Length: 225
Length: 335
Image (tube, rainbow over all chains, first blue to last red; front, side, top):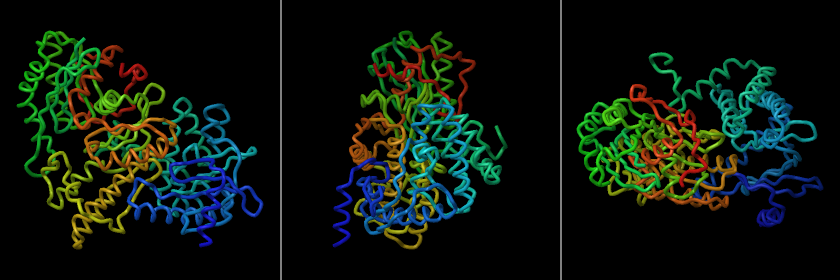
């Protein structure tokens, strides 16, 4: 019953983003500006699938944020979690997304990509794969790059999962910022390598790319064509 | 200007004839349907060779033109299966050199998107391209179609076909316009415990295939497994599409490729699009699967922008990626 009232109150907060994953509202928590991230069951999924995914993803996200913060990753501070509502309350990070910066200021975007690489590497050191490290999920706030949206993150040390992160960052800059993709990606890799051993992960990321359908230089059983 | 397009990448040998105003003058298809097993190139290619001349005759008759009135020959040179591609390429090269017509190379995946833009009137969409050999979320940026996300292992159509074949409900893979898995899913319920895998912008289906086959082995009701397999597979590609929509900021959505004939997948995308205030229109069923019209349509545009090739250079490219092609006509097409 109280949870119903809470859900009602959250709906009163200002909607600042309806993402692919969730509704994000800006409200207050104990007097602090706070993000209320409410995972909605996706209306295009079977209700049971949608409900299970929403709850699982909220709980996992909260656990991952805690672990990331403990590893000094500049993730948002976690304030509260309500699993049955698929609701997380966390710090509000004000600023511009890396995507917006990339559209505006090439040089800054390239240097922030280095920081993004560092952040992803720190997550990997903490045993976390972000799962969706696109340029929309880094925020340049008060001179510092922060990372958000751990909705698809996972606890893992599997090199495949880590390499998927690197692959996804590359894919994101190639699809959304084609004109500076090369510079951003190489800056990202340098940042990554400044924190942890990068060669194996980069090699695997390249393999993942080549595994995609119809890459011409894809490796085959007969060797590289 | 009249362009004749030849499609032969997988199971359909198609000839389409289209004029400069993008009106369809002919649409002939010879489709290979295996009696058992899957699409084996060594069986399909000879079928294409046997069907090609007849398809060409029928198409010219349907368009009421002679081959001399054709202004250019467009051909899908890839991506696709080599032996089949070579049949279409041989026919195209022969026509182009014998009748001295320009030869226009067309990327099969580009053509699937162009036919979707042409038939839905949605001019700047993010596209979900799902077929037996492809699963990708694609949108245009800076001169090319870019792959936003794709399958990390098997394509969605391949997942459905392989599952259907393994549990003995196919071939035929499609009956009365419905896939065997769709028919089998009727009356099914959702089963817990099958893996749902979306990695950022990419999907993965190999684990789902294994889990579904194992459930059948363990005695789960087949209709429930079909229902759940389809539900998870479709939901995950729609979720990748949804992320693409959010990241690219596009306002329109199209679905194309063989699996675009699925009414359930269309429903899911329609729901997703309306959630984000984006426009979605389903592609007419006749243009979802492989056809020659889409090659001819793309050929008209490519020809207008001077993309031709000499017959000696018109070689098939089995792994021709969509982002290797420049699309200078993007903002003009369809006119």
